[in-house]
Structure formats: C-alpha cells, structure tokens
Amino acid sequence: MLKIKITLENIGPITKADLELGQITVIVGENNVGKSFVLKSVYSIFKAFEMERILLRYEIEKALRTCRDALSTYRELLQKVLKYADEKSKKQIKGDISNINYLLKDIEFYLKGDFSTLDLSNIAKLIKDATEVVKRVDGIIKASIERIAKLKEESMEKAQEKGVIKGKFVERLYEIALLYDYYSIMMDIVHHSKPDELEKLPEKIRSLESVENRLKMAWKILIDDVFGKDIVRRDFNTGKITVKDIVSFSFDGDVQMEIKRPLYPLTPIFVESPLLLEIKPYLAKTTERKIKSLELPIHIGSFFDYAETISKLEEDEILKELKEIIGGEVYYSVREDKFYFKSKQDKKPFDIQNVASGIKSFGILQLLLRSGASENMIFFWEEPESHLHPEWQIKFAEIVAKIVKRNNYFVISTHSPFMVEILRVVAKENDIDANFYYMGKNSELIEVNDENWDIISDSLLEPLREIAFRLFKVT
Image 1 (cartoon, one colour):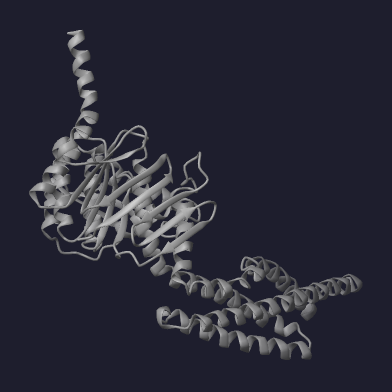
Image 2 (cartoon, one colour; image 1 turned 90 degrees about the horizontal axis):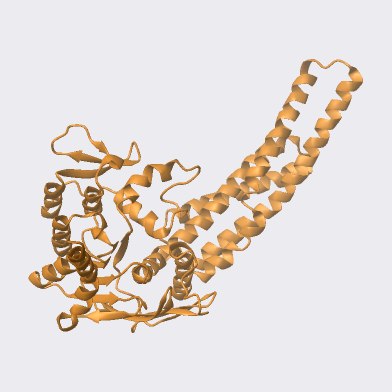
C-alpha cells in the first residue's frame, strides 16, 4: 500500500499544510480555502514524474521532427533552385541535397527507435549536423531567390523592349514569375523553422540526459500550465512542495529541486467537472486547437486523452453496475469527436449536452474504466457531489471503493456532509485506508479521525442549523 507524506509551504493561500495519502484521501472545507491548490499540487507531483518518463522521448521526437520538416522543405526548394543555378552552384546544391537525404534517413531511423537505449550524444550530433545544413542552405536559398528575382526583372525589360511577348519567351517568363511567387510563399513556411533557434536544440537534448533536468522541465511546464504561474502565496517570494524521502520542489521564479529517489509510478487523472464532456466539441472547433496538443491545460488535456480512448470493450462488474445506475452508457464518437449518452430505453443516443450532469459524472467513470485505467491510477476529483443527488452520492462512494480495491487511489475534495460521511462509511466497510482532512478559513489543513470528527460535522452542518433556527423564527 502506498504511503506518501507531502508538505506544502506557501502554495496558493496555504502557509503550510501536511498530509499523508491513503487509498482514499478526502479534503473537506468551505469554498475558496485552498482545496483545489492541494489537489493540483499533489496531482502535479505525480504528473511531473510521469512527464519525466515521457519527456525525453517527447523532446527528442519534437527536435527531430523540427529538423526533418526544415530539411524536407529546404530539399524541395533546392530541387527547384537547381535548374536556375550556374554550374559551380549546381555542384554545391547537389551535394547539399545528398547530405539532406542522408540526414533525413538517419532522423527516420532514430524516430523509430527506443530512445532509452540510445546515446543522446549521437542524437545531439545528428541534430547539430542538421541545423548546420539548414543554416548554410538558408543562405543559398536567399541568394537564389535574389537571382530569380533579377531574372524576372530582366525578362520583363526584354518584353517591354520587344513590345510583343509570344512563344517560348512567354512560357519562360510565366515560369519565372510563378517560381518567384512560389519561393516567396515557401520562404514564409521555411522561416517558421527559425534556423537560428534550431541551433539551440543540440544543447537542449544533451541536458535531458539528467533525470533531475527532466523533472525540472516538467515542473516548469506544470507551473505555467496547471497553475497559470500563480502557485506561490501572494505575500511570499518562495513556495515549496516536499514529498518526504523522495523529492522537494521550490519555486522562486525558477524551479529548484532535490531528488532522493523516484516516486512510485501511478498515473494521475484530474477530473475538474463533468461539464468538460459538454464543452469538448466547442474546444475542438476552436481554430487550430487540437485537444491532444498542450494548448489546453495539461490536467484537462490528459483527461480527454483517457476519456477518448477505448481499450476495454467487454464490461466488467463495475461497468455493468455503472450502466445500471444511470440507465445506459456514455461513450465517445471518434467520427464526430464528441460524447453521447445511449439510454437503455432509447435506440437513438442523446447528445451529451442534453444529459443531466449527474449522468455525466458516472459517465466519466465509464469512460475512464473503458480506457484501460483499471489499476495503478490515482484519480483527483473536485467536489463530485456538486451534480449528484444524495442517493447517487452514496452510489458514487461505493463505486470509488470498488475501484480502489483494484490497486487505485482517490484524492477527493468536498463540502458535502453526505459525501464525506458515506466515504467514511464505505472505507470502514471495505477495510480501505482513508485519510480525512479539514481545511478551514485560514487554509490550515487539519487531520481528522474518529476522535475529532466533529470538526467536519460541525462545519458542514452549521448551515443546516442556521436554516432550522431561521425557520423556527418565522414559524
């Protein structure tokens, strides 16, 4: 069983908070006290280690593809330039085309390989060679464009001198004019590759050899993406997240890190709201925005990655129970790039935007379980009760317990007396290690057990007492 002790210092509104993860960890408290910061901080710890494992391949693939695209474009341009070059230039251009072909062959070889077993220095050298070719050829292309532009002007002058333009001269002039326009467009494309920036890639790849550097890079991405750079408490300059005996991250405008050993590899999934299923089509329609790119916050993009994946077609006991609870199933249509709900009573599925939010909540569990997220997962779920009737809150907690029994973990924030009590009950019934914490208005995190449970019950039931008192007064 995983036992992880975490300390947050000067994170969001939190001055200091200590918590230990159980199989189920519940953060209870009012709105705007810092529960989301706790969940996102713990999520980011697991996500950083997951990203570290994939970041090496991601960054190498990204660098190699950038070089490949630039080289392919320049090769195409050189082939067009060749027919307008003088004999001396033709020899050099043919040599550059040959070099590019060899480099492209090597790049494709590495893209198909297992980067974990390769020498990064060789990859860095390949990228350096590619960037040097790109930089040299860039100068040749620019000179060739000037030559072609001059040819175009000379042709126009001859046409004006003759007064009449016809025959092969017309064809030649038309060809040169088209070619000039073609180069103007292609050079715009090429310079998106930014040859000067390509020169920085080899050193960046070498820096990835260190696990510590990869973790730092992951944390920098997460701070910008998950927290919108707003991670450190406003009245402090430095924040810190520590996982006892494993790693510590501090933030003071840059990321500082001390690592002792790797974190147990659980895959984190963050569920912010069931309404994500509804807004998915609108996100997909946004110009040039693709859900699986990093243009969305990482915790949302990763959620869609799992929700859209179907690897388990057969229904196990939990999936059958979920289908029974909501009277159908939520599924993702690859063809239409949106989610639907298929009711047992209706032949035609409902667009997800016309489905109750409570069904969406259970539908998310269906989607995640069908994606293959069946074990070694840690789910972060913000206020699941927000869209659930008390009866369905009980069902939700019971499903959580069954998922946990498959070697998974849940970290849940809530402000519902029903949800926190039923999570407490199902944990006891199923012999699940559950840790409960109360976060008050001062953002202090207090561990709660049977002996001081009234901290939670008093806080959550106080509004009901106020309602009863006011009702008594008016009646």
